[in-house]
Image (cartoon, rainbow, N blue to C red; front, side, top):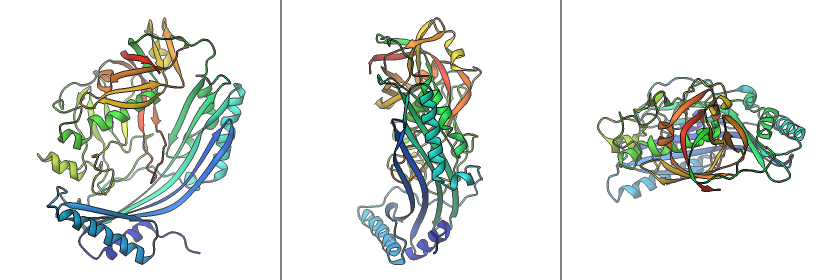
Length: 456
């Protein structure tokens, strides 16, 4: 019995089958397990072992793509032919803006592979679920959630002579502890290996947010706020698309248009896209095979840069080049994206220390259902969820009914007064389509003013 082909060998074989022309071949071999649980019992288990081949063809600046999961020679040749015909059809409408496939370039390694995680032992999932259920039970609560682990090998070849390969693992777990009245607390862990997902520890953390007592209400207004790591990570993830997307910036839609070089956040705010930062989910190259490298975005509160793929760089002009942030072969229609954001930590030891100076304010652990209100100002709206508390006289005092906020992420960063030293990888771990684990490394923060616009 033979196993799946080596991704780089297969990518080379498909490139040959394409028969010339400007072509990029991407092969992704995903192996993964996902287990869901509710009411402290397992409810669903899924295992995937899939090889996906994508062919990108370029004709007169126009691109066409096609994919397949069958690996026989006839299917691979047919897929390459479909990609070529799609590009030729697009080119009949006139030359496109795609500047051509990137040239090969040297990149760096990373430590994003864990051999034990790559074994994908179902027993590890069972143990994590049992630990979470047991810990929740100690608090008289039920546990809901999901556990997942994956091993992804990626190879890219191109007619420019590119031939690169990468292998990463990831693991993530989300735990929701709930009491009989429906009050819930949330905790999550993620990383490159199983050691980052301790089911019992996550359940204890989630259970600590299930506080009994009558929840207080809050009138709309502006309040001092402490945002836990998950809430900060969710805001920064949205900011990545609104502020640092080089295509949006070039088209005048980005939140940093006219603001590069200007102060957009409080002094001391350091935000970067750092693909090899400890605790992140690293990768060697982007979807066009361009090496990943650290990119400072906000330095000491001053906006410094946006990110590019080859398409957005060509549109931006003025010497712009790809920074290794392509999300799809040939560049996504939505533009490039940051997938390894890192917000540097500060000096606070805990969220309790962050709350200490607040006379009356809010402690929010998680934000949900975030939507963009105004792209240029990075104005979002959303609701708090599974852990919202009133801060009184410097203490996280009592539960608060969930609130709706409408505020700008840049304004919150400008009003930030303190951050915890401890950071956490925040990853939603939702894998629809080809697995691509990503997340934001974030501390908790205190900001002087968070705009509440109603109840949830």
